[in-house]
Length: 285
Image: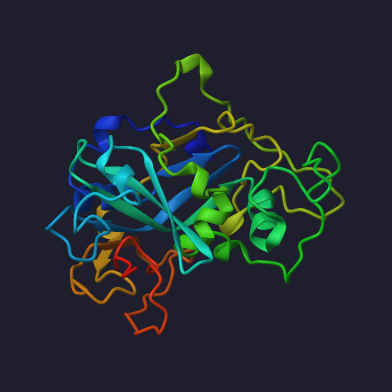
């Protein structure tokens, strides 16, 4: 993984001002930064607009829940599903079109320690159980069995937790429009002196994850960086995961042989009538 992946320029809004099934494969290899954590996207799913895609939340039109999808492109649409998970999407097309790309999986390339702490039950904040964070004494011990690097953001709910995304981030602009001087700096990493408790020196696939030195974007902001897109022949597409309508539409895109891509699962009926695990499956309630 090139060390300059976190020094790449933010994507402009026009990148997202296209149909979602065109934006989706172009998002692979891009890096979504939210605060101090960064994830290189390895799997996404596109969802179309009102009356076009019966698997999309916007299929029946605008509601209070999906209103962000009808807003400007490049914003995050974050929704709650099954009463326990948040999932994050990037809005596409101009206002009023109601389209988005679900972020299904990725590789944590910065602050894997914080992502792991969040995924281990530590909460979505930037500090540890003692409230001090790294500077105040470390992130504290995880509450569950240690999570493998490949699984930190492997699946839409895991990705949202790793990035610290929740209900309050619904509508957050992921297009950085600040001054160039305001961009965060991502210097080459150096191993952290933490007694081996946290893996700051290397991330997934053994490459540096910048954990010890990354400052990240200002709190409350996000950005999608150019990152390191894969070669065209490394991109695969197929049916979307876990939906019962338009289930054969090949709008799931992923990087071939990447260990962070989540396993494909076809739809299986559930007794609960809550919202589904993707942008698809409009809730019946």
